[in-house]
Image (cartoon, rainbow, N blue to C red; front, side, top):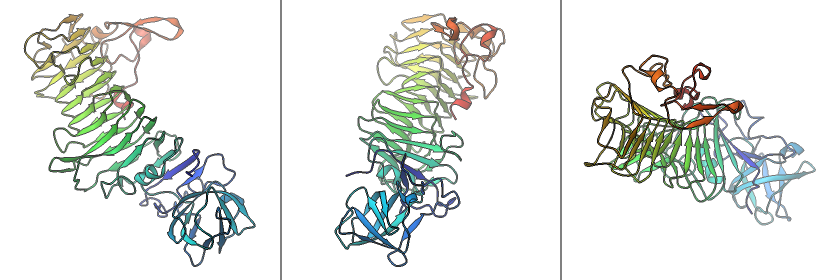
Amino acid sequence: MALNAAVIFEVRNAADFAGASDGNGGGFKAGASGIDYSHASIEATGAPHVTIDGATITATVNATTTKLDIAGYTTAAGDIGNLVNITGGSMTAGLYEIIGQTGGTQWTLDRACGTAAQTGTGAMGGCFATPGKAAAVATVSGHKIWVRSGTTYTITTTTVGAAGPVYVNSVSVSMEGYQATRGDYGTAPILSAGAVSPAASFYLFSAAGNYTITFVNLIADGNHVVNGANVAQGFSTQNARHFVDTCEARNCDGTASAIGFLSASGGINGIRCKASVCSVGFSAGYWGWCVADTCTAGFTGNSENCLAKSCTTGFDLSGALGYTATNCAAQGSSGSTGIGFSCAANQDRFVNCVATNYSGAGGIGFKTTGTSVASLYNCAGYNNATNVSGTFLRNDGFVSLSGDPFVSSSDYRNNATASAGAALRAAGIGQIIAYMGNATIQDIGLGHADPAGGGGIWLPQVEQVGL
């Protein structure tokens, strides 16, 4: 019998909450009648409510093996719903939910915990200390994991589980970071690869199985880790039902193939994410409202309303047939030798995209010789060695700019300057049916901030949206 699907786990770093430990209870069943000793009542230290040491406080399996006889602590109604983590002794180790208490001397557990007269040690209440531990015990669809930010969580092993990477497999589970209050979307917690020496490449956060798994408001820091061809990477999603929201992968650049975000299935996998200083920012899949900053290749899959900033190649759609980049922007760095948008001679499409400041291969082009069957629709370029290289199957509505179209170096919406950002406003292909039933022509690029002043779609400042 597994833990109830309504159990919620709490993770805090022991550097900030000295009582945090992977040996604690670490969770509470939502809706239970007791007091959540893993979260609400542990703000000071994160310590367990009860430490069963086998001497001062003891736990013995009752003749009814779903009951624990407790001595040295007076059980109470507030205990109900909390988890007790049995880590030692002769009884069966594991996490158990307290579903009742009797007479101040007994807990009733959610399942049998051994045979009569066996004893155990462990803890009730308190939070876990590592995200990897919480992911390892969240084995029932419905489980939720909250991770509090603060001091960086640093793995000490590449084996998934306690003190290692996060891995969720074949259950519908979510893990979400928060700053001070659950759900506040404040400063995201960081999981770092630290100084590990991997025997094989690994991801700090990964998901597998045909289940809905979500990672929200989390940062994976590869810390430039490399051991030969083996590297630390950011997030891996293996199925179209896996989702990453408002997360960042950074410093995943140990080899030329190191990846910040991977979508192995090509599903709809990420929104409002950022990859910074990665060899490949976003690989395959579908990405919306995301930012790749200082990556060798920013995006290699379907992209919508995304920004590639200071990347050698902003958007490289050469890996498979039929990828599309829509309303995206690529800004090259000074002296860039790369290309803003690139594809092979296949059926890729660039729609309402703008490339600037690529002094090497140029703004938009394809890698192979001859005529591509890729198409451009209402794209634009500024200050590139050449705006378009190669002969595309279609190149409709291209706009050559004479000025920088962006508001600033941190705001990549279209400015109002003539022959620059103003030339991109309401110049895109397609329509958006906006609020109040008004049809609005799209901008080329990432939109602009004043929709009342002449059309175009409004988008939040991309640098902020992508962390």
